[in-house]
Image (cartoon, rainbow, N blue to C red; front, top):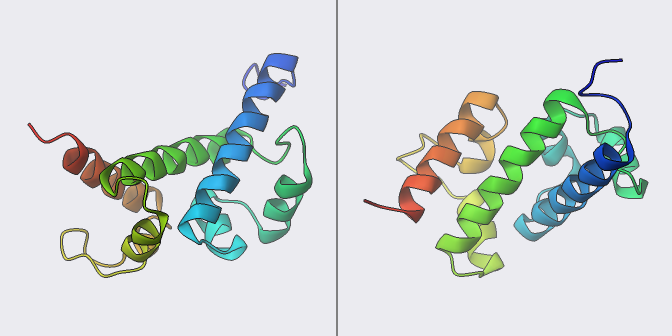
Length: 127
């Protein structure tokens, strides 16, 4: 087992926090389990297990890293919309010419997730 995937108490605690933040962020953005599963690279049954799990068991490796990026996306968007979740839900599902489509469709690929995140970061902290 690699150092990244070992189940130490500290790792389990971090994974549980990330899992909870991921599920809460997706809930606030109105994502379905199917949509979330595509974003973080897990199956729908794994998302269900994640919801029932207390230690965030299904989140490891790449899905853990994608979850961190998704949480960061949510936090950036939340800051831009001033905490208005209804505006954030609308934004994620509305065509955006700067992103080349709906943000929800773009974040279903790693490249798209990185692009949307860079866009939000630029909007959040303009120079």
